[in-house]
Image (cartoon, rainbow, N blue to C red; front, side, top):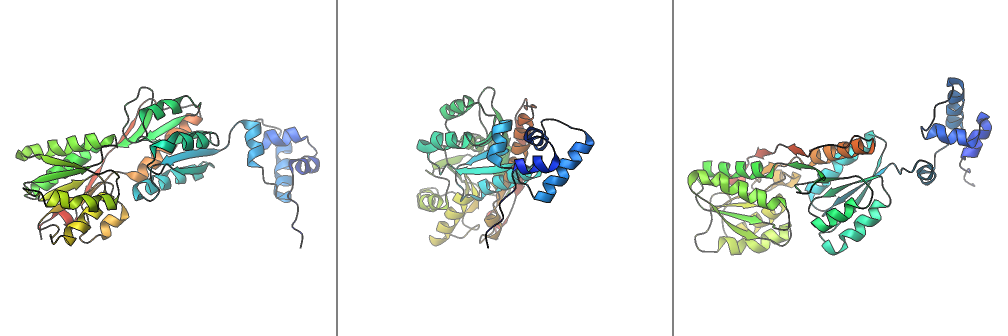
Length: 330
């Protein structure tokens, strides 16, 4: 059976007895008409099952009704939760969300962001991109909201207090009687510095500090790879804080493979409170960095900017310590 040909704007105009320009202005919200004319056009649109061509609409209004979201790694549940929060708000406001995975690849970031920018009305972007790319984005003529800490004049960001998050972890570990500490960081992330400082300040209450080790990527594989260097060193730490939950899960797995008991021999903690943290063995102590809430607020701020209400300050969210068995002595 030959499929039915979709109705066009000309079909609507003819059936409603108005011009195509009138129909276009009505459906795009550019002009109001008499109640009788609007009711007639609405009835015809419903009867014909007319669906507007998004490309045609964008040519008339200059708006795509789409927002771009650029994340560093789609496999990381932290970013997946940001997408979830942003998408929920986008749907509520009749916007489409286009997601780009930058794949932890600085070499392709501008290429990918440029292609995304041309297809959307505004952007939400991870602040882990280089500052030169931040400046380049500002020249693309589209409003941008970042998630994560970033120090740049005129840049709007939504972030969770990383200093406070790490400080809480340090104090928690100290309260558990831990004496020797290590931090497995990811220095490519801007918020790595504030996490390390928060941890060190939290440990200072017992006159302790953390030795610092770094991974090249925030992944379980990197946590697994660095574990032996941390735990087989002289003066082995009895508590390790990792840059994120993924690194912590890989680290904890390898520690157990080395014959160490978690948490009896070494406590392990991370950041983000991804779903897998709860189901690890033992369940992982972490800090809820409000990932999904970041996505919600970032989308709200961006939609506000698109409506002419540009936010005048960053939004700082409060972290929440989630203490589980990976840091409590059994």
